[in-house]
Image (cartoon, rainbow, N blue to C red; front, side):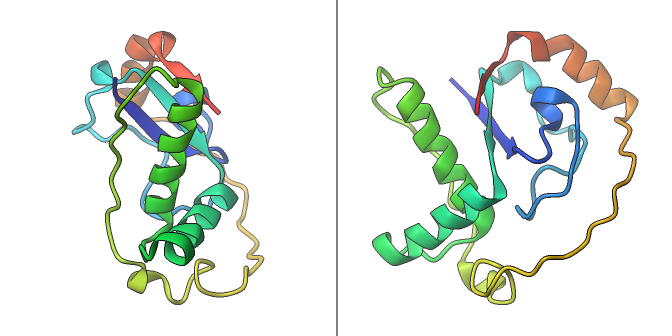
Amino acid sequence: RLYAVEPAEAPMLSKRTWGSHRIEGIGDGFVPKNLDLSLLTGIITITSDEAIAMARRLALEEGIFCGISSGCNVMAALKVARKHPEIKSIVTMINDSGQRYFSTELCMEKKDLVVPVREHPLDEYTITELNKYQHSWEIIE
């Protein structure tokens, strides 16, 4: 089984919508051409708050100082484990060090930034790929 994870605030793969979120490096509103959607079993959505809380928890409880997207990945793995207790081994990735995030909400207080609402139309490739595969995915929220 293979699951993709995306920000709940920008569920482009699962709901074809995009919105502002605080998980850097994912949820950019398009399907990259190096992502083979035919391999996916499902999509897991994680809120920015869940991702940040997990990254902080990993640092405090496990000594793993990682970025927000890594917190997102670990939270997604936990959601899969809860939804599918029959799965005995789950693998995820912790991609980078938290050192890159000293000036972000991970290490500082949350800053409320106004992000303008904007249209975010999907490109033709993304629409074509989603039309082919989206119907077969399990969505875990």
